[in-house]
Length: 402
Image (cartoon, rainbow, N blue to C red):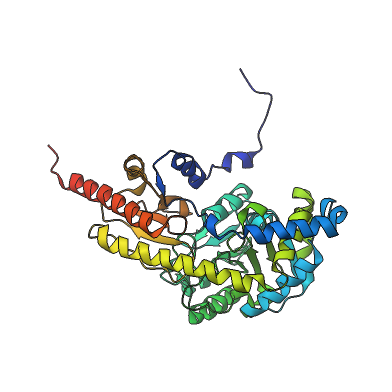
């Protein structure tokens, strides 16, 4: 039967998240999941959030439950502006827009800055959620040649600036999703200078910057070129993702259009959530809370690093991340991470194949492992299972064809 509905052209460009699809599989009993980019639920400050909810509903119930300003709760915006000063950024509260998770910030960026056929530069590989957010607006993705520190400066310098021009470069300098890599201070200077000379603005996404293990990351890219940068942050990794609270910081000339896009999307981020989070963090709570997350995640990182060395077959490549939540693995030649996933799930282990993180020319030999949701003991068990799956695949690939 024919449908009366005619979908917009952009709808055809929308695709399901492979991560969300894999997470459905991991709900089966007995699966050790290293797939989702989920923070450890053991880090959620339940008691502090519960107390904050009580205070908000006791002191300002009508305001908290009413419609709110599209820009966000003013004290929270002031807190964000003060907080990013530690990253070298000098911004005013009226440059801060509170969003429904930083994922909404990505969608607003796409809505305001992307045009059909206009280039958007992304790292190789890059965050899958950003590709999902930008793709419906029909940009032409330009994949930046990248190494262990992120995009190469010469790749940014070579971006097209003739009309329609490269609209922006989307970069994750701190413990990148999916690779876990971090840009050095010297690379940041080189990248920003290359972008500035090419006339390509920077969209800087920083959801993992607080999750460093041995030393904090260098100053934000946005601190080096304030007028040419837009910055995205999130409370999901340091408090709880369930409140869906993020923020963007934009140059004054860009802010009004982003605000209009926000108003059209959802009017405002839930005011109750904003007030509760502000009540929790206003007196320095994160300075005591986040170090405990770092300690937990560092121990898990060390456990996975040891397990990978012990159990993965020769030919696998990886680097131990200095922060964040992920290991990025490259398998030996001849193996396909997507093709091996059903066998891994059958063996009781789940990961995310890396091909989905590439805007162009995916590398089928890559996969992402999250190390923050399992205990060190389960990490060891899961990596051992993965190692057995890979060893069997390599043995099968070595067998002569009859």
